[in-house]
Length: 499
Length: 104
Image 1 (cartoon, helix red, strand yellow):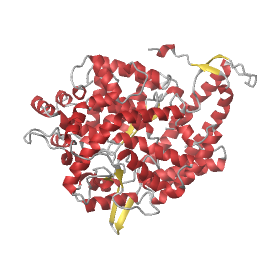
Image 2 (cartoon, rainbow over the protein chains, first blue to last red):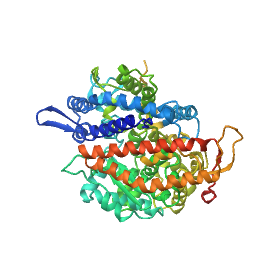
Image 3 (cartoon, chains in turn purple, yellow):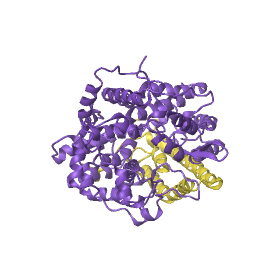
Image 4 (tube, rainbow over the protein chains, first blue to last red):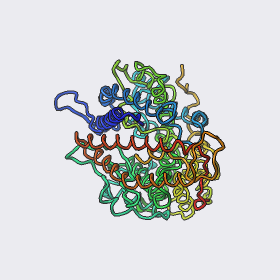
């Protein structure tokens, strides 16, 4: 968020940004004296409860923290636009989308083109999930047609539906394993937060990356402190390139979701390490910000039952059992990977409207929900108040983190994965391929990462995949068995939510 | 995070030919190198301290940590603007990257 050259405005915007960040980090809502919840507590309800009233209370409760942010956010955008103009851009939108080695309009058209490729897969998943949730909660809570109510999706923002997996998929053979319960494994094997991080580090080491420096282990935050407020939102830090001072900040919970998030954060850390040593300061960044987000997620795609077996978390028989139901595995992944695609696309579309002034101040919240309905088919469970500012309840809005990067990462990780698997000579369904311990895959990945930002992102993409074009086809190929299965399930259902 | 902001004002590194525009200032490869050396030095000296300020704020949410990070935020915003100001004349020149060592 740039500031104008004016000293007073520079100070004002810096203050607002710090305030908004702190408001989110320290955010809590009290229903009554002594009955207070922070994000972690609210998420505990949203992620696990199946009581629609309790879910609604938690969903609405967390959104109270957004309301006081609204005026500050608008003022920040106002000053930010002045700053963008001082930098020679038309405004913040122009500035934010200026980093993609092509005109902003062309780039945005590319993101829409890829979404058009993927929408049939998302629509099929939406249709199935809506039907199953409606069976569970009843039509009063989840109607069989129209949008999905946001509070019953097992995630505070509905950006992942992985927590409702058991409600939307029942294995054909009820005696078969319903997949790998990593949370249970971590508990049973007494694997703590540090050890979870060590396992993720070892994945990178297996690909030929250098181990993380001692300072990473000494200075990172792995567990939520009890004595102070911290921003728990997971992040990776490149504090000092010359000193290789790299850190992760995360309030790790011992569960499968956080195990995956650790891989994501270490993807950033190893990217830093790769270009810190090869590039001058100005090129110490990702080919574009989507690349930076995609690296760790690429590894997460390789966390297969066979991988778990190789690192000793499950037996060979358990791995074989887990692989026997590919729909189960793919459904669990799609509820996160596919579900997040329209969410990651819509968020910056909302922000673009606010930055440009196309969205009126009085329409900030309505516009947010219109976009969520249009792209995700998700709606409010109950009418929102006039002063509501629900975007503020998502870290990346008060934190000013661009979100298109996550959209790009969702697409890129599958392109990287398919390409590396092909180059490794892997034959079989893509979801069974793991690049763990593969020398060739490691070489290709390290070569791309060490480029940093010294080349256009298309060159970096070509270096790894042989193509310069963003494409949703790899994701479609990955989930083809699931899409075929969903199409059969949805045969007699009315899908879609428009109108 | 600050590094990304600062890097947005820089797109290329080595001048190989001048723009024909008569409006272009009389800058040459040496000007660009001097500018980049300055940026490199600033990133190496100021960057880690600013990063520590942000780290502190994220790990200790207090009135004072907010104050410190807001001050660093402001300083870096102004530094980035100053760089942009210096960079604009350089943008009038035609650039091409020289990164053979990174060729694939």
